[in-house]
Structure formats: C-alpha cells, structure tokens
Amino acid sequence: MIRRFVPVYLITGFLESGKTTLGLTILGNERFTNGGKTLILCCEDGEAEWDDAALKKNNGVLVMLEDPEEFTTHRFQELEDQYKPSCVILEYNSMWGIDRLDTVRLPRLWDWAQMVTTADGTTFDNYMTNMRKLLTDPMKIADMICVNRCAPDFNKGSWRRQLRAMNSNATIFFENLDGTVDDGITDEDLPYDMKAPVIAVSEDQFGIFYVDSMDHPERYDGKKVRLVGQAWKRPGFPKGFYYFARNAMTCCSNDIAPCGWVCKGDRTPDNKTYFTLTALCKQVQGPDGQTALMLNELAAEKAKTPREELVSFVNL
Image (tube, rainbow, N blue to C red; front, top):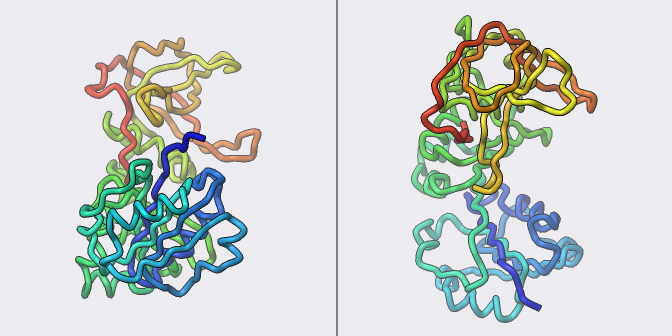
C-alpha cells in the first residue's frame, strides 16, 4: 500500500499550559489522525498524561524525547521506519528554543500541518512581563494561539491586541473556565469604527466584516453599514431579495466562491457590476435555528472594481 502525506501537528507552550490536553483532543479525532496509527513525540511531562487507555483506544504510540540531543533528523527517521504512522503529534518543550525546529529535517513523507501554541491565562501577564521572549517566540510563528483557563474578569481584548501585534495571521481563541470558547474580539479590536452612524467597511476589510458578522451577528443588529460588493442570484430567493457578496478563495485557487449576506432590495442580480451598498443590518433566525445577519438596502451607487477582487480573510 502506498502511504500518503503524514501530517505533523506541533504543539508548543510553557509547562502545564494545556499542551497534552490539546494533543489528546487531536488524537481522538480521525479528521486529524486519518484513522491510522498516531505517533506522539513528547518532550516533557506535564500536568495531564498521555494515559494508556487513550493511546490504546485511538491507536496511538507514545515516545518520550527527554533530551534535546534526541531531537534530530536521524531519530525521526528511525521512528518513521519503526512505526510508519499516519499522523504525528509533537508536544514540544519551549525551553529547548524554537530555533531548534529549523535544524531538523523531517522524514520524506512527514510535513508540518499546523503549529499550535498554548498559554495559561492564570500566568499570562506574569510570563509576558518576566519571560516574554520564551513565551512569545512560539507565538510569532504559530498558526493558532490558544489561551486557556480564562476567568470572567480577564482582559481578553488587551491580550488579543498583544498577540495580534506579534502575529497578524494566527487564529486566536480563548478557553474559559466553564469550557466555552470565544475569540475575545471586542468593538475596539475591529478595524472599522463601530460607533459611527454608518460603519464604513473598506475593500480590504470585507473579509473581516464577513467573518465577524457570521460569528457575532448580534454585534451588528440595527446598525448601518457601507461596503462594496456585487448582487448575486441565488436559487429560491423570492423577488425583492438578492445575495450581496464578493468572490473569495475559500481554501485554494480551485475553490473560489462568493461570500456574503442575504439582502432585501429590488436590485436585479448582476455579479459582474460592483456597487457601494448602504444597508441596515438585521439579525434573523434561520430554519435551522441558527442566527445570521441580513442586510436591508437603503442606498446603492456604482463603484469601481476593488484593487484585489478576491476577498482576504486575514484574522483579527
């Protein structure tokens, strides 16, 4: 059987910041492990344990790398030859330094899939003050940053701005003490003025507005917005409604689709002409019980084609 690409999920962060707990979540999800054997490379013992029951249930094998000298290309190739995994989870010791990751060449089939950095909300401020470099070096190159154990009174907005300043592309989320998760975004974190009589969303902010309105439709309920897009036709839409949207690359160059909102207005759908829409936002409930944002057209005027026609989803 020809083996496929082996994703390597790198989890890094300070001791007892939730790395193993996150790793166990990945181990238990076949979407990540491809349903085969998962090799866990653990560089330190933390508060949570890679228990035998979880390993057996999810076809995982644990290998401890207790010395930085074991973190080598040769050692990785030995483990590849021995276990032939379908997925690798690397729980990395940040104290070894992020630069060490650049010194190791992965086996031929292995490739970095995602880098996640975890942080403990109860020690975040202290570490940022006293051990800033060790805490932030992994965050600067992470695809995702997770701050867990967040109490209700924690200043997530301030933390988010610090994290965004050092990494403009990572997905950032906060896990609360009750197990719920949120993005920590406040009105002050958004790039447009939420207090303006009409929220002006620039061409390059379209994607940010789209994502935030999907996650937080209640934030925009009753507010007016102005932005540039197109009127798209949608099957089943009654007369007086159209889909206000712009094209976006959802995952790759072969997967381009419009993203936008249902809009109430008498405009004839024409997805080749751009126009500036001024609309009143309304939070509505769909047939599936989920809430979404709908736009009510107040005014429209012809606009120039955006400099970048494909929408960008740069994270807040």
